[in-house]
Length: 156
Image (cartoon, rainbow, N blue to C red; front, side, top):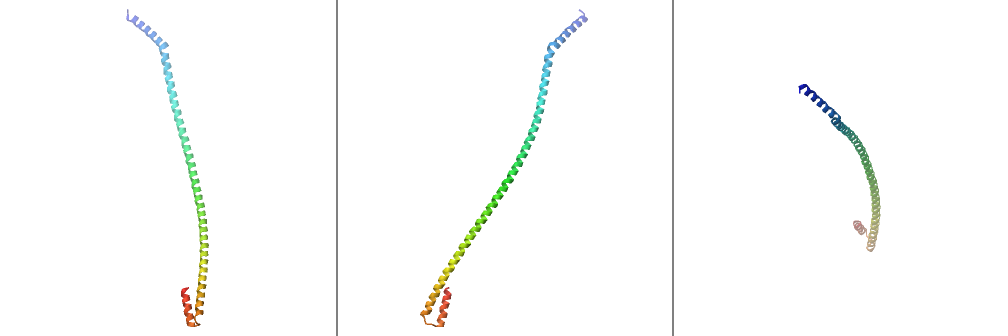
């Protein structure tokens, strides 16, 4: 056989092999490659979507945190105002109670002063009566009267 015939037969066999491969082998490989490319594209799209969702979630979280901080600051300010109001009310009530106690103490001191004066008057009256009795018992003498009055004065 000649080289030309061998070459022609090899070309025919090669063409049959290429045809067989193109008809039966290549379509499943192409389909698998297309499916793989499609899955990769879907995965990349899902990753991009997840990134955008994550960014949006971060924004919402920051907004909620800012809102919560604002509400917390407002609540703290309100609590401080309430506490200040309660303190002011307590001070007012304490002042009123102190004034009442002071007024009651003044009234009681005044009453005790009046009682002490009355007791002193009674003692002075008793001493005056006692002095008068002593003067009347003794004879009437100016020197003795002066001495009795001095003793009475020292007793007072």
